[in-house]
Image 1: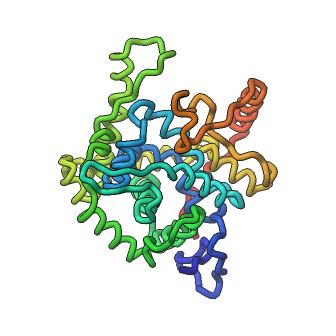
Image 2: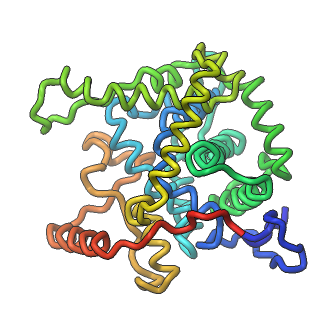
Image 3: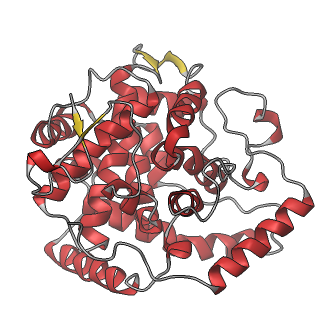
Length: 353
């Protein structure tokens, strides 16, 4: 399937759009750059964790191989760095995609129903990607002012271009935005299930780190509202058939409150600078694109304290953030401080052309 430039699908005349190579990475003019690194996607954390795990093969892999419940914050926070990189790493995006593909080589087995699974099964791998694409759609719809139909078509084309960075089979990828909507609806209606991995997401608690000097019950109470709010948001953005299957309650009043909350979030973020609104990997990408740092500057990696537990660090399924010296940490802190002091207005607050 040929991909067009980021302007395609936005109403531009086809003759004004240039065709890009299949393996061409996304760039700063894409809508995906605008939305995927936005911290507001974090409000759908429970939603994306649950909807991913509802896919039987993916859920089985999580049940058998993941330690998400042991270190949920660290696990999610460090994984986001390479996942963001497939969008924001420019000429190195395909390398990052291959890195992520490598983490999934050993995630395979047989689930409780006797069904074989492998994380690199093309249908399973694409489902995970589809949920990231829908994360953008739903975040923009609920918390960023909404999307036009042309923008949804553009984001679909970009998600295909993005998926090529993984070097996976393109066979599971729908041919159009309309076909993708049918694909998503079919998966939700016919294939998703409420398994142990999904219930673990709904019942998640944030374990207290050993170095936090407060009673565990106090720590748990601190995080209860955050997890509860994400569960409520997840209930609202689930497709109705999935919400019903999960046994979640949702009323017209809830829908009104969620829409009002989303509008409040949109307004609150209108003046938030990029350095706060965007993930660090995305901020660095924009700086490279603007020539503010060298194009071959080292990629931003997760902080070392987000590394997996010591007993898991030799396992190929884990991204291990590089260790930084004290001097590197001090330099990074100073650089961030001065960046925030000279922060600029939020980028792309208006509708894309």
